[in-house]
Image 1 (cartoon, rainbow, N blue to C red):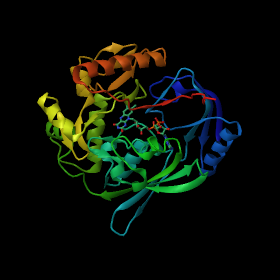
Image 2 (image 1 turned 30 degrees about the vertical axis):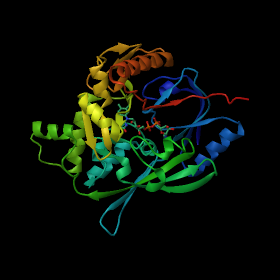
Image 3 (image 1 turned 90 degrees about the horizontal axis):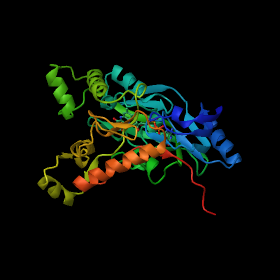
Image 4 (image 1 turned 90 degrees about the vertical axis):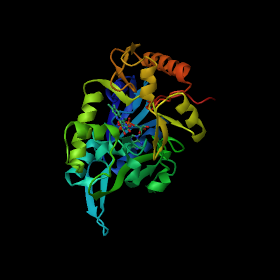
Length: 343
Ligand SMILES: Cc1cc2nc3c(=O)[nH]c(=O)nc-3n(C[C@H](O)[C@H](O)[C@H](O)COP(=O)(O)OP(=O)(O)OC[C@H]3O[C@@H](n4cnc5c(N)ncnc54)[C@H](O)[C@@H]3O)c2cc1C
């Protein structure tokens, strides 16, 4: 285990906000994980699990405890009797390396999840999704350290109770399980058509006839490079707001008002980026955060001086969208902070 002291959370997260963390513990083996929790318990410190920090926001006062990061690497695969391929990935692998590895082998299932920044261990937490795929569709199980019982366990797909941007790991059991590895089941072949609209448009515009996983990866990478900020060059947490999912009884009203409701396998959705754009906010800079013109769900930290700037920008955006459309936008990224328990 590597023990680091007083590390700025802004240096560990792609939105680049946040004061110092007392300790950052980088774990390189399962036994390191239990040691890390033992270390924090010894000093009575709170803990927070961090990956690449692409979906996490720090606060100015930092974190008085131990941030624990999975640094375990490795990808292995095994052909199953039915011809599908089981791929086991250690949680510290960079997610896009996993997509590169599997698409190079001609495996379908996660090619549309290309270029999502983050570590593999975080991928099931919010059930990463993009361009018509989500990790829940191919995830078989995860190995975890259960901080409640201090034991190692395997949780299956069904245990995780996946839905849009949710699993038990960020809802009912948030912070309880440290993901050590994830296991996917993929198959040789191609993604079923029709593809997501923007992929279909790209294919048409570029006369593409190769729909292999590797080709879809290249297409998705090109679409993303044109639209989304590169975390190494521009500070953001990707989509700052979740899309709006409507209950069945809300759909007719939204249609009557002329809002674009997408009916999909995962429910009836309004793209929150559309709401932000139509509220006249896309392209504006509020409190140091630019609302991306090409992807209005994305806030780019251009010159914010602290968390309060983000809170002010968020309040302006959510209230303008609510006033115009009657929907409250919900924040996607999680936040690292510590509140003293009441005595
Ligand atoms: C430019 C950009 C584009 C993005 N595009 C997409 C997109 O298309 N689709 C999408 O779904 N997301 C997208 N995101 C969000 C982000 O990439 C994903 O949420 C990703 O999974 C975050 O991984 P991470 O390692 O950075 O997680 P972190 O931000 O470090 O952590 C996220 C959450 O996971 C928990 N966690 C992390 N590691 C573990 C572990 N080993 N065990 C248990 N819990 C853990 C943390 O406690 C935290 O709650 C984007 C972000 C950016 C910056």
